[in-house]
Amino acid sequence: MPNLLTYGRCIAVPMVAACLFWADILAGGMWLRWIALAIYVVAAITDFFDGYLARVWSQQSAIGRMLDPIADKLLVSTSLLMLASDGTIRGWSLWAAVVILCREILVSGLREFLAELRVSVPVTRLAKWKTTAQLVAVGVLLAGPAGDKLAPGITLVGIVLLWIAALLTLYTGWDYFRAGARHLIEDDA
Image 1 (cartoon, helix red, strand yellow):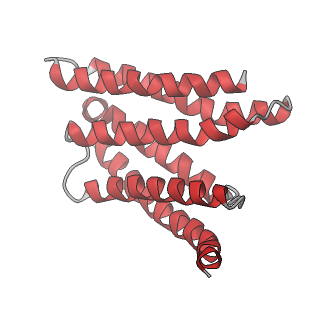
Image 2 (tube, rainbow, N blue to C red):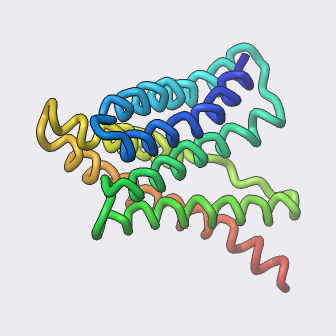
């Protein structure tokens, strides 16, 4: 069951992207943003439950440990790219998205390298908060212009949350790099 939740999160990625794509193309397609948000929220909730259920039911697996962070990265990065594409994230706020995307690539590459050395860098509590901050920021931004029609300022709140997520992302990225750097230096010595 926990792995099925993770697979579902992966399947949600193209669904969210398609909704955002068509919301931007179709006249009056703002309702598709709400569908994208609903799919995204369900997918984000599975991020908590897949790990929780795996621990409670003692069903932790290698594929689950590998696929869970990948599913998170796919969901967040695809959403950020689509939000940049439709102009919800623009101007200086693009830098927050760039920081998030670059950190995810850097940490993934670092983890891959360290895995070859049989070194594990555990996920920190702050990294879990970073993921939560990213998921919430992107969720608010998915509502974006459609949300602004209900409550003006939703997009601005999402942008502020995105910057907070970017700062946490930068800090946790540095923390991972610092933790892995000594292994990089030892390997070259």
